[in-house]
Image (cartoon, rainbow, N blue to C red; front, side, top):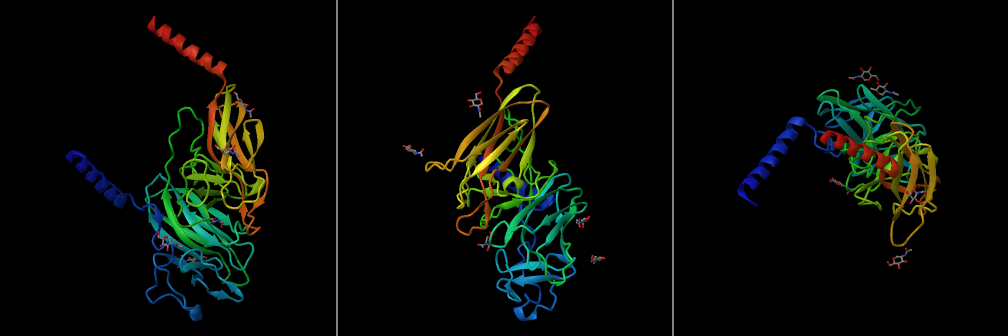
Length: 386
Ligand SMILES: *[C@@H]1O[C@H](CO)[C@@H](O)[C@H](O)[C@H]1NC(C)=O
Ligand SMILES: *[C@@H]1O[C@H](CO)[C@@H](O)[C@H](O)[C@H]1NC(C)=O
Ligand SMILES: *[C@@H]1O[C@H](CO)[C@@H](O)[C@H](O)[C@H]1NC(C)=O
Ligand SMILES: *[C@@H]1O[C@H](CO)[C@@H](O)[C@H](O)[C@H]1NC(C)=O
Ligand SMILES: *[C@@H]1O[C@H](CO)[C@@H](O)[C@H](O)[C@H]1NC(C)=O
């Protein structure tokens, strides 16, 4: 490495450090996002849950309780997603934290949440004026909690991240448990040259903790501008799961999507197309290696075409590729995927799972249309020369 090169590297590192200081939050846990920082007078012991404690790094309002792994409520043991501590939000209680962000950028918030006593618990996550209510009724896995992601666009350089329990339960201490709150600034991947799908390999998405093995649920998000999975929307009531190659089988790269909600978990994208042109959509369908009970099948949609693709178990590969041909009818064509079956894991018979999709491409296939286009370009070129 030459001297100037080293200098340049040093400069880059310095610049990055400086930029982080100026531009705000680094990707990862927010301040005390895992609730493991002890309050000034210590964590509440099991016997003293009545004494309210401030939660370091957070502002709270209403019954906000620091809970400890193993803590009991009646006959029920409260679940702490990770580490020793988490918080529980009572009726209409909230916690909030100010974040320094970059105005105009899109951020994704990852957090773990589980419900306690009530069935219909839900959590309002907001960075005012944006907000979303996350329904915690469906348990996607037997552990009793899941990581979720939600995205917002920063309208200011300083924003408030708020988690609020909107419920009104008879038992005011019932309410969602939250833990592991992280943030990630999203970038929109460049549009590939010959592929109309944005982020078709799913490599850009929400923050994932390296040591959390449950993936991240992506709940309904109908706004393609502010989505935790750039390019894609989750247009169904139920979630899909964003998975990583550290804990799951992923066909390509480090990330993919597991369709774990049957026909109620749909992801889609509007891709740019030319009317009357012929296209081929190719994609990988596989299993996540999470003991999901076969059969696995995906229904793929592209424009007015739809096709079922059954995954054929193959000892040599965790996925297969599939394709679907269609003719575009408009400037934008919807492509979408759902799982044909409702699958659960074979080991616990209740955790939801399903087929994995990855590496989605939409390529021009109509050679005659293409030939005409090329001909036209050549012709213009000839004209230009003349
Ligand atoms: C706490 O929440 C209540 C509504 O639930 C609100 O009226 C009150 O202003 C809040 N207090 C603070 C300090 O934010
Ligand atoms: C969620 O919270 C935001 C901001 O506090 C609020 O504007 C919105 O109305 C709430 N949504 C629901 C469904 O309570
Ligand atoms: C996960 O990693 C974080 C730091 O990266 C650590 O603080 C935490 O204890 C780990 N959790 C588990 C369950 O290993
Ligand atoms: C797996 O690979 C081996 C060797 O390449 C091949 O003989 C075999 O047919 C393959 N099995 C399947 C199910 O494709
Ligand atoms: C799509 O068209 C290609 C040829 O252009 C063909 O090889 C492929 O089998 C077709 N796919 C389907 C699902 O019919």
